[in-house]
Structure formats: C-alpha cells, structure tokens
Length: 258
Image: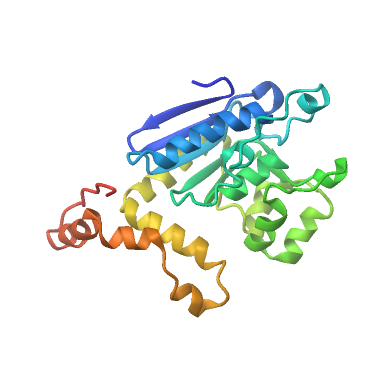
C-alpha cells in the first residue's frame, strides 16, 4: 500500500486504486509520482499482463489536478515524465489498462481514463474537461485523445464548453465501452480483464502496439507495412507455438508471456 494509492495482484492482473477519497481522488505531483512508480513496475513485470485503475470510494474516480494543493503552495516539482497518474504520457506501454470509472472523472481524471484501452463506467460516472473554466487547457493528452477517439465535432462539444457528460452519453459518444450499475463496476471490469487474459499476452501486446503506432502512420499501407517490436517478439515467443498446438489438441492454451 502506498501513501496515495493501493495495489492488488490477482494472478496476472494488477488492480490500482487511487486513494485520496477526501479530495475525490484528485492528484498532486507526489501522487502522480507514486502512481508512475506503480505503472513502471507493471510495465516491467513479465508476470503482470493487464491492469485496472479505479478510485477509492463511490464518488470520484479522479477529480483531476488537486488545485487546492497547488493553491496552498504545495511542492510541484515531483511531477513524473510519464504524465498524470504516470499514464497519460506513457507512450511505450503495450500492456492493456482498463479504467473502472466509479464517479467523477474530471480534467486529468478524464485524461487518465482516455489514456486507458477500455473504459467501464458506473451509471453515476461523470466526465468533463473543464480546464477552460479555470483558465487552463486539457494538456495531459485530453485535447488530442478525445478528438481521435470520438471525432472532432463531438470532442469540441465537450472541450469548448467544459460541460459534464454522464456515463450514458459517454457510451453514445463512443469513449465509454460499457455502463453498469455501481455495485457491478469492479465485477464487470474484472470480467473484461479475464477475457483479455484468456488470450496470449504476447498477442495482446502485439495487437495494442500495432494498433496504436499504426494510427500515427500516414495512411493504411504505411501502417500495414510498419515494423513493430511487439509483433517481432510475438512470432519468436513460446506462445506463438503453444496457441496452434493447443488448438489442434483441443485444450486450453498455457500461456507463458514469453
């Protein structure tokens, strides 16, 4: 257990909980630095294949930057290079992360969720990029990720107004994968993780890396012909042999992740 977060390991699954419920799990530089260390460990641990991130309590996933801490003169020097929660600027993470959004996800909190691969939201969740209302901008990836995920006009309707979007509308807009009852949130997030864990982790990493880096290419052909490290690792792995072998033997594969 850290000072600002808790972690739980369940087999190949890591569950990370932002633990500042008295501030709706708003984050300050020390909290971001702590979470950066958590996700450094996740990225480098060969036995951890999928992560879920959520917030403590039932009111807030993450209310964004802790403006009160900043206004009170708190030390702002500990901000990690990997961004808000150690995730929003972690460009080389090819392991999947699921956001289980249990309440408000505002500003940096929404940017954490947008940096994840899937968003499962409680019916009580609310999303916004309200930075312009306090003279700021959503520069931890929000202004770039949201248009890419839901289209420019839909994104502008949120970014230029700072309006709050309920979970159901987030699902309609396309940035939320599923909306569930509050008491089913973590159960359903774990079920999504379990479905991913049924697949070869080498294949999952190859898929995520090729998809994400492919989006940066100029055109479909360039993406198709791109060279991806995780794909090369996949075809050299034990899992690349185990998958077809298990299929032919009509048994469940025993993935090694190497």
